[in-house]
Image: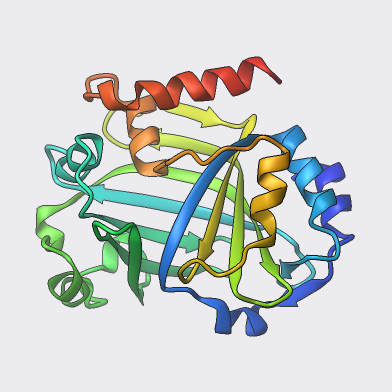
Length: 253
């Protein structure tokens, strides 16, 4: 994480992981935004007095590693690409600073609401032993034998919480992708992915800040965009507008 970003984060009051447990928002509405590092700097200045930053063992950002699973023929990717509203993702996420690893199933309904279920696992090679199929049989249309690891990513995440503790704002920086089948690497290093997570339409202080900075909502799936960036044979017609938006932001850096 860049020093100037750390200095801006140091100006926000901290919130501990224990305090964060009451703000899980496991049944939530998500809205994503793409921004430049410069816009993020301005946002962190505007957030002073209105947001707290998650702090774990003195660190105000966390490192993540995620592996996304799909069917051999990329059924989950294709359903998302084709605009299917009811869809799901299956992933294994490791919080690198703590070492905690989870198998997660994310289901999105046709109203835009996301439900996430997860269990603690030891790692990719112990999913069957760690009751991975039990989780999937309850919350997914797939079992582990139907799926293979496809794409992995690594990133650094800043988590902000409003003073009323009714929402979380996650900011993912330095996102790097690797496709497990093609062995192609790519990076989203100069842009950040902002995600507003809240239950329903409660008041959100950050929305006016984002408007002022001209940061517009932009649906973004790290799995799908990462796949499209690292597997050239995948269908990507419906993502062309997203890549135009990405390139426009990059050209304005």
